[in-house]
Length: 433
Image (cartoon, rainbow, N blue to C red; front, side, top):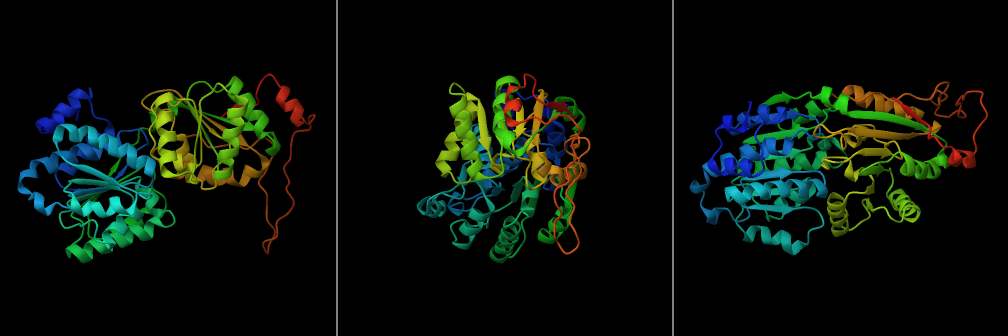
């Protein structure tokens, strides 16, 4: 479709699009909206930042509004007609905000329920009539088991960032949700929409197993050419103990605009954020990790969105978070889970903007780089270049029986730089890849 008017949306949706100055749908919106309006189940692969939320939100509101008067409000207490499942609190709030902006015009009721909400709020779900629920897998399962939420009116379920279902814990919860709905309704979910940025190796098998009663239409959106043009990757080769000095040099010389520094551990997020705050007292620095309370995480993301600056985060911020003007991403640590490299990179270079990804690479990362390259090559939504180790180096090998050999990392026969000399270098060791 060349413009949104071609979909024949109801007046309320047209008013929202006009207010938001939206005229031309993205590729994922063009391919997804009509099938969803027609009641088809979809499995959608589309790059991050491509407009996936509106791809399911617009047809969802259109369909629910058309039959709104047929639904008895007394039947809607604790019984949503649509449920949207997201993997993180941050993505939950982002989706909820978009839905509320559409609901302002469509006059449908949207509620949210995620982990960390107090029990009283959860119990109040069946005391209120609402149309759409935005929640997380664990919280939804708990609400169904306690009969705080009923699926009796359920018409559509959307799983945003659906490949996260394969992660530890989520797959079991989604299976249990499906079983609960089958038991209560004596029928499967009528319509399911799966939206994801990657399709891991076991993804299709999992979908076939859990949603065996739904026939999915696959929607594959490429868009890699644009991202290849707008995301540059730089490797910064250094010793493990040089990370703090090189971080200071990087932030002084290279980092321009708003950016995210990704680390692997929660305690490292605290340490690195403290270092940046102490070294650059005038910079706005925020941190985001799993040890924070929900309200602390919400406040950090809200302030970062509004004020910009630097966010030091674990992979809790790697998926689904949309910061349009994010200029750069620094992988202070390369991620343990290779697929998260793809998700991290997807935070920048959005909406046609220039984006840059920087990687701190040490000799300890050589084996990890191989797995990351496999993740890059196995997905089709981001046209990222593979990572290359420094010349003369090779991965650490293991002997039979599980005993590891000593590290054998070959370096060029040049004078070695000490930590002190690394700090004094005027030009950072950035090698464009």
